[in-house]
Image (cartoon, rainbow, N blue to C red; front, side, top):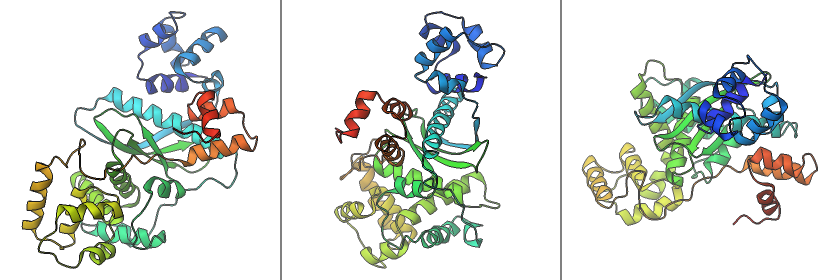
Length: 355
């Protein structure tokens, strides 16, 4: 039956039932489409083809019997984000991960399975405990103390599916698990593709915290603060920060912080917060620096601070798809469908023309 997939694909595009009726030029009514989604009726082959075209999916996708669902969804959003926006994001996540998993099945053994870290270091009782948890995860993953060059790539190597999507402005990111018929649950982190690289990297580290920390008695607000503390410690390891900055500083210039930003790939504001957390600067210096940052407009989503990073674009799925085409495992048209590209654009990428 096509009900779940039809509804998911429609919601991924933000379409109402009447919108879809109009998109297929009234071949059937909105009421009939609603019955398809409830599996009370099946469309004719002609109507199925029209619906698939309107939703930019294949008829085979709508007819597939593979079932997956989203569990543990946690949106980082403004308070005015609506249910319809959330449902659209959830539909996009499921659609993307299903295409991703289909691709991984072509290469047995190539899929990275998520293993949640165990141990008392990840059971935190206060916000400050997140610092030790970040250090423990760096040690477990053999990362050393050096800055992390590519957060999205690191997480995908560890079995976390990273998706950059055209999210509503009110949604900065989300974390969820995809549950399927066979196999373990798959963790997913979504970032807003319109955010700069600094913000995306911090969102990835923040959502990673929600995947690994067991917060005990902390309330929701404290859990968010602990996730922020974890993110800062994971991206800016204590040992490296003190090595490049010194144990205590009476003053730090914005110019020096801007240069350090190139090393750690975080915002200047995040560097100031981290310096304060580690006791490198006093509260007075912290307040003075933040005053300068706000005066220059270097805080918030529209920050114009120096050396803004390009967004981190997850690459693993596309690499696997291009490999599958090169090895003859799938056709170019199938690869284009999996990547949501035109065949012409896929050809360009196969030729190494990415501009």
